[in-house]
Image (cartoon, rainbow, N blue to C red):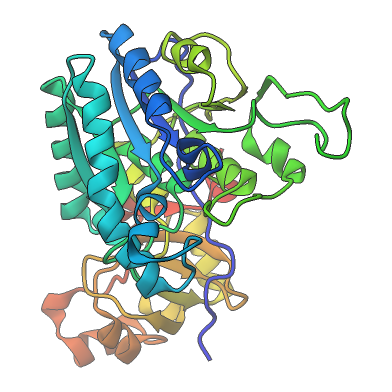
Length: 386
């Protein structure tokens, strides 16, 4: 039995930037609906005014709300939970969501452009680069990109799953200086505010890991996230150089402060050293569909930045093709690296455990004998040599 990766690790290591020029603002469904079944057009208008007031900033909006905007039109009393019904609600709601954003920004003299993503847009290198170019072209034209997951066609294999992590990935796509996860609470509390009235918002930490024990859960069915996913997204963003702010988006002054680079909510600093673009791309991906199980000898070799050879592969999981990004895990399913594989899954299955000379006989000399090269691989953060 092939071990499924039980601990998928993010890898990059970034830089701190105190004066943001490119900002990704993420708005959750609870915030945009104000806890009701209707989108709050005044809140959207206040966001547009705040963005227009900071004309020297490049702003990308990651917007939830498609399902919330569409489920009632399909006769549902509450947001549906079945996938097909959520997809249908998203199909109806996405157009309405974009119209409302378009109207809000039109009133302040700005245009918006829609970007719908799925996880395969991010794991496939060519599609990732295409999305990156499209976003940059919109920003250069002075258009505000409105990003959302393409819920209508998302399935388990390609779903990102929540817009907090989608926002973190978007921050990487546009080389953002700041990611702002805007919600209906003022930040991360040191204690549960529903239990302890003396709970206070933590103003600043060096890593999202410091806050993991302070997740008090989501409260509404309309939301797919919660504080835990926000901290996961902040850790993901931090690993490729983008600090994160978690703050109250229901306060117009807070959005303005964030765009101005002023203190707001809980600020989670980025890591210290960035990776290059290709390594960024490898580091930020979620939901990899293929993986290799390796023995202890291969794990130690990877830590020394050596190539992954067939001899160290003991199992193959999922489906993948030559050139795909896949994970490398041990027999417990813990991920130690990820990288660009040089064979498809069927060929790796044929040659796993073999010595170099045997591989040449089975596949032919021209194919090469290395499964994954160190220059197309990223190690888990804990194992990157000092």
